[in-house]
Image 1 (cartoon, rainbow, N blue to C red):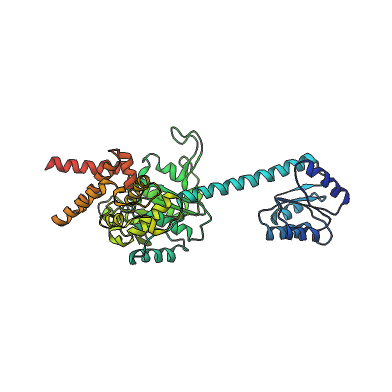
Image 2 (cartoon, rainbow, N blue to C red):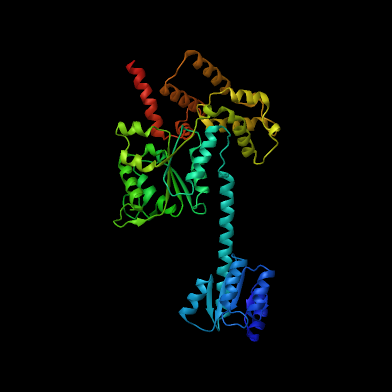
Length: 448
């Protein structure tokens, strides 16, 4: 839309803007422009500041009320910094002084078009990411899960640091995303990082960034993940795997709200809500001097404990149906998803790998059952053998946490054909931790 009270400019724009590839509505004054905005939506409006009825600022303000995505460009004969500032403060994209050259106007409209295309691409990318990640949704109606949802609802609107505790595969990142989505920071970045998956030599650079030449291989400046998450939330998964040297630096960031890039002396303020998670016993780690006590108290002013899947086995059918619908990409009638014989098998399993193990089982069955419902024969053969192992475990009585942990590791290695990096990823632990646990068992066997 073009709004100006000069007849010569009106005639010019009626001729030239279509020639440049634009459709145009010409308005002779501010009131006509406002009426046009109420009836139609425009990609861009070109408005003069001084017009009868309503001035250009009023037209821009009305435009932003009824169509916030429409860009506004000011045309004015009063070339002054005050004019430009007034227009920009009211939401103008840019301004041109009259008389302006058509080539200048064409270049400015090209910038408007480029911005709109970039905005559309960003929205498409956000939609794709949302489709892949899914909306944070906690499945389960058991009392333990109802308590988790209540705690999320209570703490999400605050800026408190939250510590999520639970076994590997229970869905700690899902809870972290739910905390972010229900907070006042929901429209800002959510950055997740697995502290156990990063090499010790690169953790500081990943979290806080570095300047060019700070160390060998630092060929460019790098922005750290804390800066990327500015205004939003950062999720530090497996915080128990963080090296002691980095624990002190993280504590300083949490206390001061400032980071220091590797190789720089100055600090940078960051506004980030920190959410941490671990499957380890931090109290025991503090006692063994593997984790700083002051950091432990700093990251857990509010704790959320996630129950293991075996502790809420009644939720398995609904979880399985949800996972199947997600794999197929569309919801289906519940009775058509999973057959009763398959549900019986799923309910009788111990689920040492928790929800992550259930997700793998459903993915396996989805491939075999094609478009039909999942039946018992579509489930992995290992599931039956693990059922027998579980029954044997009950017959022989109590089992140590170490033995239970090793069973989960061995099962993960079997599912991944001995591939240790894939097994570690599935278990939610670092490759280093996996090797340490295997070496511990080997040393025990040798000493025995």
